[in-house]
Amino acid sequence: MKLTKYEHSAVLLEKDCEALLIDPGNFARPFGKIPGLVAVVVTHEHLDHIDPQQLERILAENPGVQLIAGSGVAASLPEYDWDVVSPGDTREAGSFHLDFYGGKHAIIHESIPQIENVGVGVDGKFWYSGDSFSVPPVANPEWLAVPASAPWLKVGEVMDYVLEVKPRNAIYIHEIILSEAGMGMMLSRIQKTTEHGGGVFHPLGHGESVEI
Image 1 (cartoon, helix red, strand yellow):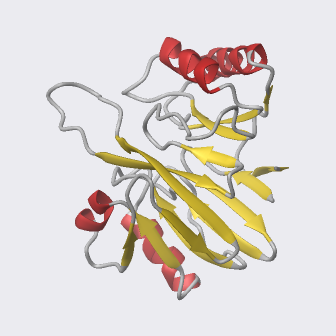
Image 2: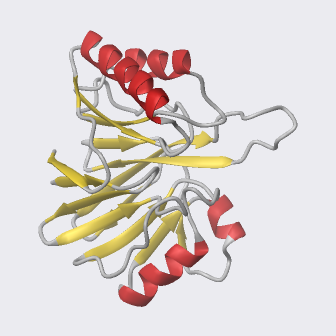
């Protein structure tokens, strides 16, 4: 299976001539035709994870794509036909097996309502928690997407998350608000904590891929 990282939250997985897109938000460059696209998975309704204009482009170029998300996304974008999932659910999207977990967005501030956030595991190999530090329901997962920056996190929490999960491989996501200096610092911390648990950190840039 091939994993390609795009800006911020967007990740594309490909295998057997099929593709699965996760969280195509408004910080990612416009997506057009994606060969073999079978589904779009959205963890929560924030615009940096699902942008209606982005979604319209995707659906126009890739008709018949399955849309999968939690009830919060479905309620915020009711004009689309969502396959609504909850933590503990599973789905098949083409040849991809999906496991859903987590349930809540990380707290930003007590004045801001906490929304739903449903993480997704793909084929039991790649785990993506969205805007949360939800721990995947498997020990030492093969691949983990690690958030690098957000209004809801600090570096110590990121490090503790990686140390707790102990992924065998990690990539970073959620980096768009970092400066060049901040990016270097955060990726260094993610690398060190991944390696402390015996894993390998893969600092993929926009459009870069790795076989998983």
